[in-house]
Image (tube, rainbow, N blue to C red; front, top):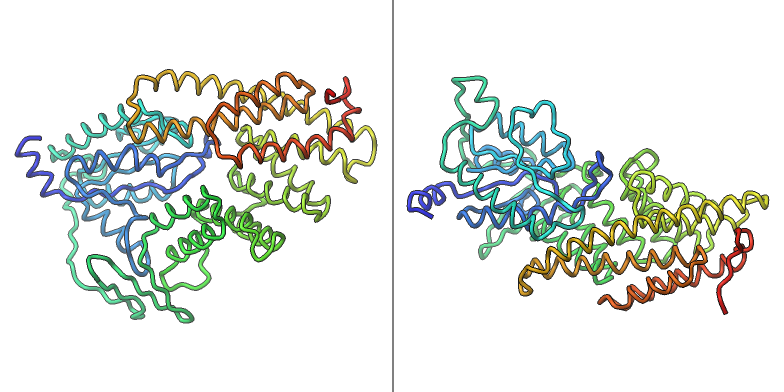
Length: 482
């Protein structure tokens, strides 16, 4: 970097990133996008390489409403990068504020399947390719180069990139007189201690001390879920929601960020605390905050399906079986993915063996529908395996010791394992035992955690019981060899 560029970077020392956090649903495509990976892999390394401090809203330590430091960043940050992926309404709103406040140094990016917004058709949007919950290593390298060049160009020019200042000449950007502000109710103070920030927020009925950022709480919560420490994860995501709500308002629901509620609901029902049934009830109540009856978010309805399935399996009645089927159907039609497909087929087999099927014809209908659904599972599995194989071929040339490459390969292995066992389950229920055995053998060759194969074997055992009871209704009849 030249001396002039070094000086410029030193003077313009802060980049604020406008985007969602966690895993969000892209409603246009039904896919889930891990926005934390976008931030960690594509954005932050590039910004820091330019000598700028990179920060996102969930990394800000604050007392009171997050709106105060967010608006300050939108005005004062030397550069703002706005990621509009999943058509996040908050990101669009914050981008509009930035364009109104600052004439230049704003960069707009998005995942490449975002439908180009009509009112932004005069703004350049730099695109990247997201695989859903992962990003291919080659794409990481490509986009980092593109974003680095874009960022340097923004730092080197004073030409307006805001449409407000482009089309309304003569506007003078506002400035902010810095002063120590005291909240009207005097309820929030900020203390500096050993370079860290301790936020004390006093509500009418409770005193809360927070010394972690939202980003750190989420990171620790996700790690706890990965280790299956669900009680710990539950506390961490509960704290995350509490941190978001530290603005002195009582009974506020964070209904504009479903990710936190979804993860808390997952950790809650899997924690089985204080007991399994109570945990399921609490998990479902959390999802109710996301307008469960009407939402088109596949993650929300899939979680609800999993909870209702567990209710049924714990002997809480066939009504939960019916609800599980309805939720998995909604998830299947919205997302068309393996998880919803394979669970829908299993629950249809359960219904064929329940009091919900009054006639033999209804039993046959469910058994046949389950078989049709499993055919779709196999198609999805084969398509995903084909894409994974192509990706792995491209990745063979990448360095083995690259940390991000290692993470990507671990992700690929986990995906392959679940694809193979889902394929094995589908073939098994269709009476295609040789194909099922082949898929199981392939899954066993993949490095995986012991609980993953145990989970598959448990599911297969439950399915075997159902098919032994009602497999004769199929044509040809289902019968396991030996």
